[in-house]
Amino acid sequence: MLDPYNRNINYLRISVTDRCNLRCQYCMPEEGVKRFRHEDIISFEEIVEVVKVGVSFGINKIRITGGEPLVRKGIVNLVEMLFEINGIEELTMTSNAVLLDKFALPLKNAGLMRINISLDTLDPEKYKEITRGGNIEDVLRGIEAAKNAGLTPIKLNCVVHQSSQEEDAQMVKEFAEKNNFSVRFIHQMQLDKGDFSIVEGGDGGNCAQCNRLRLTANGFIKPCLFSNIGYSIREHDIESVFRKAIAEKPACGTVNTKGDFYNIGG
Image 1 (cartoon, rainbow, N blue to C red):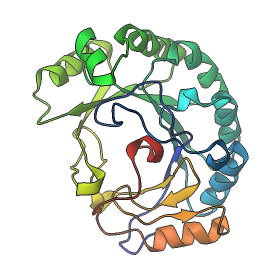
Image 2: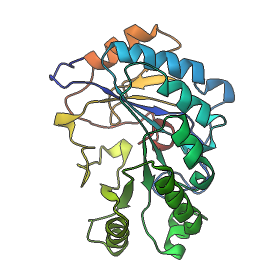
Image 3: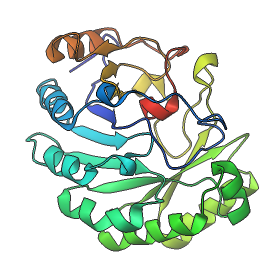
């Protein structure tokens, strides 16, 4: 379905949880965050219903995000449920890969097609510092498991401070080239200040070509990451929510003062 700016909206990013097993400095404060109540988190049945309605509006591309989606109990079952929906042509996930060693093959068997993995450095101490305690070896095992399971092509998401020429970013690029992965450099963003830019190696941040909507972990469909606009699928019928979100998708992002990366999905 076309939005008011003639963009074909066919991509839905689904945040299945606001929880994460890391505490990355640019995503969460050190003291942690106030989590949604259990009853506020969208159920698998609600997600499936949203996707089915979305397909009727032209959605054919789904990405599962978080938080960290692999900490959501039953995530493999959700993938299987989404894979069975007629009209979905692309079913992918973004993960920090800490738990991927365990989940890669079950996810592939359930229908997941490929995976993006967050990786900002290959230096063990820097990784531990950035993530506030993460172990890079867990990530490397997860990446290898994803490769062996066929969740390819694997894409690495690398957050940079100033440019992709930074030492850590170049380290990730070299690792990607060596292993036949692709890498996307994402400049650090700030929702409340409207600070974002086009992703190097990807199409994120390019407002003129944005084709996506977002379903938050507590059941709101948002037309733009950098906007306060959002409609609850629990307070309105899902079809009307899609119509409103598409009709009100802004020409370009501005600011978001009502959400955070950990519960919208980045």
